[in-house]
Length: 446
Image (cartoon, rainbow, N blue to C red; front, side, top):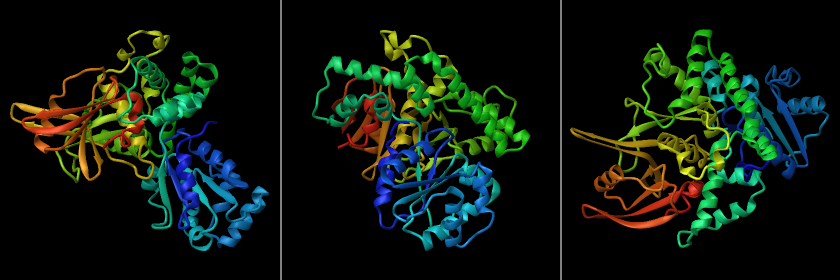
């Protein structure tokens, strides 16, 4: 196991006097359980872990019990003593028991000094299907995503590179030699991806070909999971999306006949709704907003993102010796570059399940589209993704002209550059940020 950034949030939660039971949400196999175990080992004297996939543990939650009785029952079942403040109680796969979810209310109200964390891979899907929910106002949430670039570096014992990236400021110059080294490290991360089991195996063997069986197992697991929350007919729609989505990342999709199928729009839309709740796919909706609030147009076709770049690469067959190529920029192309940026933007928000938009403008004879809109300091900031080191910015300039904004972002393979731009009398700052600094994008904004 290797450390994850979300543990820093767990520590903040632990130290708050008003903390509530913490619900960790995230897709299957993104490392929720492992992160909680690392946190517990470091910060608590005792750790009690209940997995509600196991009959012996789910039997503890057959009925709503007084908290004193529940605590006594857990202690007898596990053989461990619960000491508030010194023991962390972790309930995994909590979606399997509505009783366990309701007990969180009484744990918070009657024993707030006992830290409780719960997790589950299909929480949102189960909640919608079964019609139950967490007690309102009695729990708090955080969101976990695949391994980020800085986490990947730390897993590879490359703290030196992490420290270098953390120390970077807009006044600092990165040499050409260092830039190429950092790009190669980032491209390595992009190819391997951020599924923890894959990363752990790669750290151990450094052989990309050893990873295929894990990628296949993860994707197969996603497909088999659908029978836990869907009818046989609906499962077919879900499996089709899981199988074909990696092919369409970064592209605007149509629900009708998605993935060269014969499925109708309504069936596909409902299936996408379910898989987005499971956090396996993301839909980036269009917005014509240039100022806050960012209002999404749900009638316009969305762009599609998949959970993880490594799974996308496995599906697309980017394999052997690719890291030995001289022109590494060929790895990151158009829509795949948008997948990388979208995946990174989602991972930056731990406390909210973010909704990211792209900007569009439709006028007769003139359309414009900017890849992403982000919200910073009460402003809407356009973010354009350029796969290589250069690229035209026609749509970005159009956004800045119409919004009269003063800041825009370009994510690219070039070094960090801060430029003063002028479009039709409107002056603004353009920050060109290299892919390897994506995880610090908000910190680098003026």
